Image (cartoon, rainbow, N blue to C red; front, side):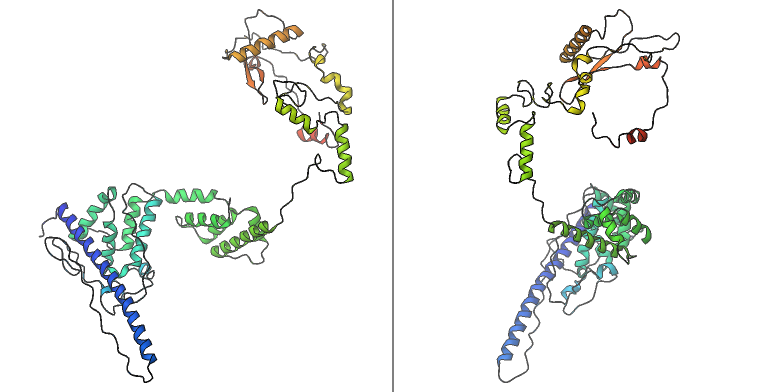
Length: 494
């Protein structure tokens, strides 16, 4: 029975494994450079032979000396690929990429990973460089965690010729998990080394275990909720990208995806897509067609001539109609010349009345002219008429209280100094005009102030408690559409 390994021995074994993999990477890099040099020598030799008048057998360059694995400083030994590290049951043989003429894939490599590697180990084409993702610390979960795993799988797919077994790929990915994630990895590595339990030894098994631990458990529910409310607010390309990202979390059928994707279209794209004779029944074809429609619409908008801004009548007077309009402006009693307007602005005067202390929007004075259509109603809109109460008539509205109703005083709202001053001015004004009179009743109604758009204060009386003990004056109200129908032929609204 083998003794149980301590964490220190596990760490030493993992460090040796990392050094071995680094050694394999260095060998691959050196051999790639040698292959480039060999290719250049062969080309130069072929050029020299072609320049000779008499042909002969072309000399084949001999094999170059293979790269030497640099020693690793572990216990004074040089651990090369193929040697077994003490305490580690995983043996790394010499990488197949370092042997001449080897074009085989790693053993048991998944189809999805081997098919992504376009270069074999015997090819002279230089492989693209891909930076190794940073170690996963386990502090972020959900989408970011699965994105890290996807990047690691892409890196392994591009460098799959450096691994002999799929189990080595799994160990390589587990080795790049630190901090909180290392607490989850340590029992798995121990089970792999001891050969006990059921540790993940394939990429698919690792993906399943990783997502169970670090993926969002409610990702499918959240994706379904987001895709149901997703609509196109920008370009169709961006909309389709968001839709496909959410679709990757779901397992719906094709018809539901198509219905949901077309439902979120912008109305213009949806309208133009419906005009096609043969609407495709494939989601990818619909995405391509909608992107093409959106690009065409954007191109048409960019090619449309820009509208010229309308010319001002006050500065341009080149036609007869403009001259007539200019005369009408001069005859208007409310017309103000640009010079007068500029003078009022620089002097801080109101453009409407010429007084200081307020602007044109806060001006209490009316315009000079009165429309002829409302001239006969001038008395109704006058200030003097407003100061007088209307006479009593037979249709005066009464306030009928419930029997034995008690009028309790309401709450007292706090006021600022400005509001208290405004309230006093309002009471004095109403007492002077006779609209209100002094009262000694214990019942009262609270009041408050709200600000108007022009900054002044509006008095608000809180009649809620009075309304609770009052008989409601209920009667049928006319329909809104009937009232609006009476205004169809109106030309002026007061």
